[in-house]
Length: 204
Image (cartoon, rainbow, N blue to C red; front, side, top):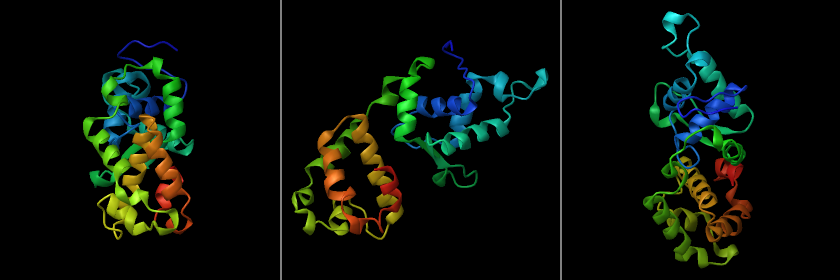
């Protein structure tokens, strides 16, 4: 496998889609389907373009979308495609996907900013780490304390779940052991939280 900067080749299409998501910052942020497809297409027009030479510059969405769904099927990406509502569309790398992408990072050119946390993300982790609610004993710490620490209504479960997953992912990327310990002790081991955090518990 060789890598010119403007080309990425691999025997499995879903790996190219995984690496496109990774290159766009999918290890820490939600990346839109069209951005991932466009990146993969630019890397490998021969594979993801129409077969007639006169149409090679036009993407064939069938293998591109199939590659995304295969990456999800194999546990490398998490997300969905929604062409009507961009707020619901997007993909991120799973832990397994991040490990795989890191092992193949020599295939692509990834800007440091796509792999490291922004100042805003570091600020969120710092505020999470220092919140006074996490000083409570495990038995006294409730889902309401967690929601308050994140400044999210306990009734907004989709946002609560996605925010916890983001914080977990950011703490993994930055190797923030304190935040990871808080998540493990205050959230993951709270059996009563499972009914509220079904999505988050599949990630953390």
